[in-house]
Image 1 (cartoon, one colour):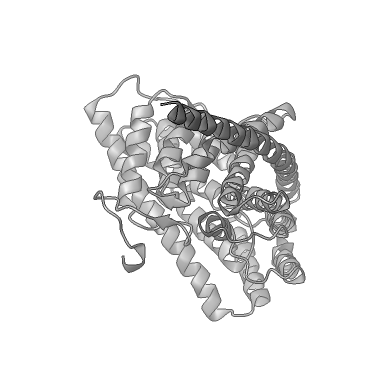
Image 2: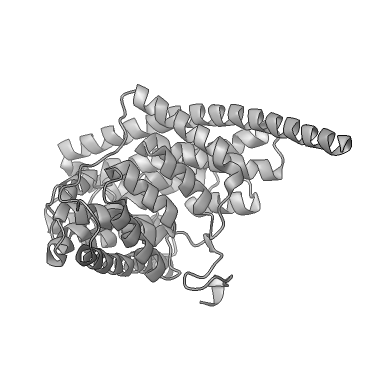
Length: 420
């Protein structure tokens, strides 16, 4: 009896010291990545503001692409895998070069400054993950702990830019291997995300939040059917987004094997399409268009054009994230379809925004939490329904080729995604 008690006490002491270790690491990662993330956020806003004030700068986009490829080649990162590398780093403990951080930092700013269609949160995952991974090597963490600290960096990077710490934590644990949550990272990742978000807010960067209009007061069958129909539409668009991104990327590889020619051609295509459209609604991340969609205003063709221009940009070799473009696509899709389904355009924009995100990332829990952080808890049953349907019906497509989907979406069993 006494022996069991002593063993229990030793286990408690060990757990306490592990807890203290991860609290300290979480605070350090959150502080470092938070400060860098804020700088990144500020530079992106400045770059976007400058481009909107000087729209003619888009004429230099093809040459900006050459500069990005040149930077990666100069620093020996010719075969950069983007966010996929961070996913592999967590799952297989593959080392992430610290050079990833400055490269994705400045190349994403360049992409936004000159008018490429890209987001920012995907870049933040690479930024935070690479910094945290390097820190883990400095303090000589073991193999398993290095995976946890990389997830801390991912959460801190996402949280510092978007101000949604809970989503950042769950997304960093859920996106690696769908069906398996890495709960060992929940304490340090939460601390890192909260610290990063707090630093951002204290520096004047308020969390992203939207006010939706026409959110139903209670649950009813007719509204649920309409929300379900929207969820099906979001699943289809999620698959389309992933397919277009993949086909364009491989098309560039086939027809333009030289990366400098590839990025120049991609920049020229973006320039030509922008001139044809006679607007820059689809350049940059498009946060202002998302805001308009949430207010109930969107062009019918907006979601399709954003998919195309984002694929052209990122497939060519420009840098940035894919997540905000999915918000753009989902918000404009929902805004357009909502009234036809008997839903408020604003409410449907919010549903679409998070359901398309769910479909392309295969992260249903993070998507539902995102709804709460962006819109509040009112209507949460509808958000969960829409995201759940989008998750299930989007199949095994996804933005990240290195993401592992461990369980079937239709049965309680393991799957082999490679044969699907």
